[in-house]
Length: 111
Length: 111
Image 1 (cartoon, each protein chain N blue to C red):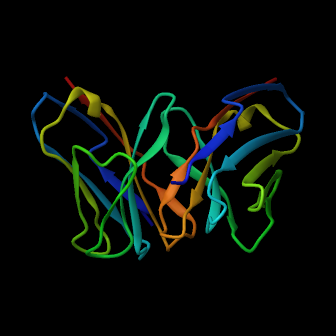
Image 2: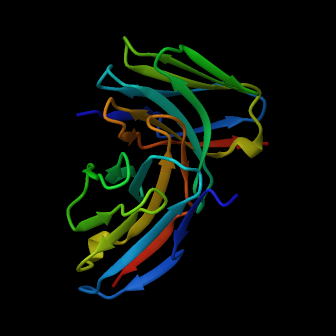
């Protein structure tokens, strides 16, 4: 059974810092991995999808990496801004196509 | 382009009542998902549909039924609502194991 864990559960940083959010999964036979952002009371917005054959993906100030052998993914946010404050969720696709989520990291970027 | 549309956005039910949450997508995706989100629990998969006419249980299927009668629509039914089913429900769609897109959610309260 695939389990996805995100550490830390909450993170507070000053504006301008570079930061890393961590995601680990128990079954290395994942197909793909996706990172999402969720603002309070809102739905999920897709940030990055890393396919199983890739090691990383970049979009603007965001960079996500995937290491299937160690069961880990990281989301790197460069030069953080108050507008980055949100909950960040990672989710792993298993071979059957199901998408399993971690519990999320709540990020607060202080001006 | 509407993406993933969920109805209703809010609902209050009495214990024992039944209701159906509707979800429709216009992106011609094969895969569709139903999740519930509770505080501190992340998103938990209720049911998954890989294609029209097929459904598969997720992590928390008890108390729910689903129907995928066509490619566009995936409905979630609560036959006899219980207070434990108070939650925010999200529907999502995607090409198989590729980027998933989420609706804005249905906030359900069972009293």
